[in-house]
Image 1 (cartoon, rainbow, N blue to C red):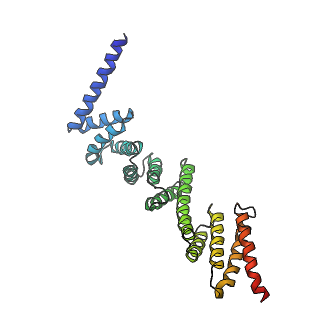
Image 2 (image 1 turned 135 degrees about the horizontal axis):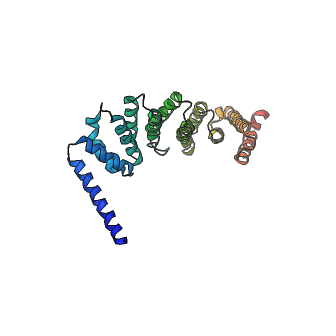
Image 3 (image 1 turned 90 degrees about the vertical axis):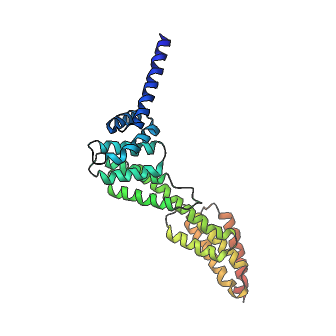
Length: 265
């Protein structure tokens, strides 16, 4: 009995495979659609895609086109081909604005672009595109069940941009270009007032101001020391228990010691 079942399973698989190969080669679009749907339902998305690609140019305007293009989009998404998925979902949403799947398609299209977002250190063109798509979805579907996830993904992407901007500004401090560091860190704090990197930015601003002051020419030293003292105050005002407190206090002591010579004069 067991051997008989194995034979039945093998025969069924071979029949299914032959049916798939025939559908690929023949021009019968109704048969292609039937087999593609069967492959999709079985979770064999790569096989389904090959048939959908053949069907797409001929299926527009047909009664089952909406279902076909939805499955086509989902197949790209399920196989992690996010660029193609994003394109197909956007095309589906534009082509079938009254579809019951429009909200899901709009969300998954935006999410597909977010999956293309690279690590923060690389070019963030795709991240900016994904942010725009997700914001459009949130604005268009404020009561959507996908809203929390869309908002969470959007937050993650924005933090990635913030991290890149912060690391770029911090880099000037790392290479001892303290004047450029102060400008870049000021711009960063201004551009991202609620950033989770604000404390770090304030510390590196203090460090840059301090290093610039203590290594300054005599004619600019007093002013730069005063600016460094303000930078210390801004850090402590932001967080009195900052993790940089001990380092900041050492810098403050040095700032005040250097300023004594001007008060004595």
